[in-house]
Amino acid sequence: MNYTNGKELLDICKENNMTIYDVALHNECKTSLLNKEEVYLKMKYHLDIMKNGITRGLDVNEKNIKGFMIGGEAKKLKRYYENNKSVCGKTMSKAVSYALSMMEVNVSMGRIVACPTAGSCGVLPAVLIAVMEKFKLDEDIVINGLLTSSAVGIIIGKNACLSGAEGGCQAEVGSASAMAAAATVEMLGGSPEQALNASAIALKNLMGLICDPVAGLVESPCAKRNAIGTSNAMISAEMALAGISSIIPFDEVVIAMGKVGKMLPVSLRETSEGGIATTPTGIKLKKQIFG
Ligand code: SF4
Image (cartoon, rainbow, N blue to C red; front, side, top):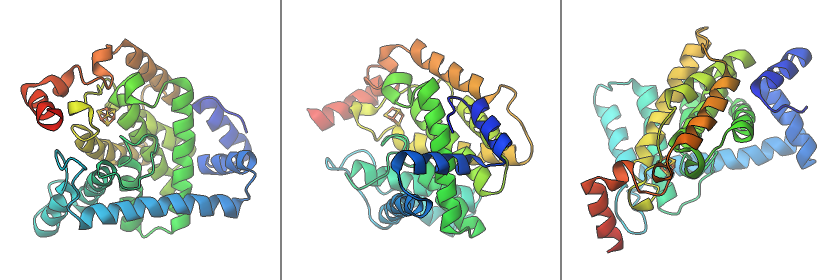
């Protein structure tokens, strides 16, 4: 079932009365030569890595190998929302703590699933697992969500880009957020159209976001951008499930994001030559780390 953009994917879903995850599963079986059960087992393996990462980051004060910029924030947020009135509500706060947790595991060289990249590895696990816990969903439904997200990621990768070096953080965390938004919609019974509306909204909300890691390390602003990608995915999914459409269709948003990425100067695409990387504090931190 070949598709190169969202419209073609929706046409396939409509003609065959399928969800996006049905199409993704069909294609995965075909290309991997695995049967449905084997694909689910493979996806469960990845889901388990995500779950373990979240637990590990929340239980341990992770410090990266240089013991520097991030570590322990996930635990702090958890302690806060468990003992205080949460500004965002428990589900959102919990999801954000999960995103921070995954990023702490990432910088400490722990095992993560790069989905779509290591720098944005917090968003998808955070959203999917927080939603799974809130609605007490079966693991198979979450795996369906992962399959939905893969279809969205493939379209963005084909028509724009997925890396900060190529298109800025909008391409990395923005894409992760769009993938998680669509996954949430289908996990909660929304239609394929609603899923791509959620993706379009999520991608638009982060459009233009630059990539400017302090000292060239995927820590700051990356961890907190995963937090915003997480909350953005949840907000976008909520709007789409409520029947709110993206005024600009998904495919057009993807193309626009790719074009914005190409317009970004090299200094704002992972080179650490602009943005917060070149603030006085950013430069000071770089000197402290690398001498
Ligand atoms: S700022 Fe750059 S390195 Fe950090 S998460 Fe965003 S795209 Fe990745």
